[in-house]
Image (cartoon, rainbow, N blue to C red):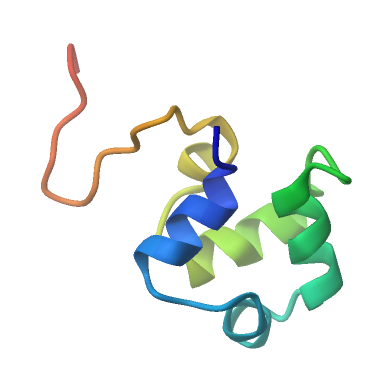
Length: 77
């Protein structure tokens, strides 16, 4: 299963370096989060990444295998 950060980043066509630049989060931290070496980001880190990835913190932290894109609706909700 692909990590939500990597999934969202790739959907936007961003490299880790570009996400780092946009979010202000070190590329090393992004890499560690994507590879699972760091399991959960701090809340401020999650907020910065979510803003850079154009999603909510909930979508970033609790994404399933398929996160609906803008305009799609979630099943049952």
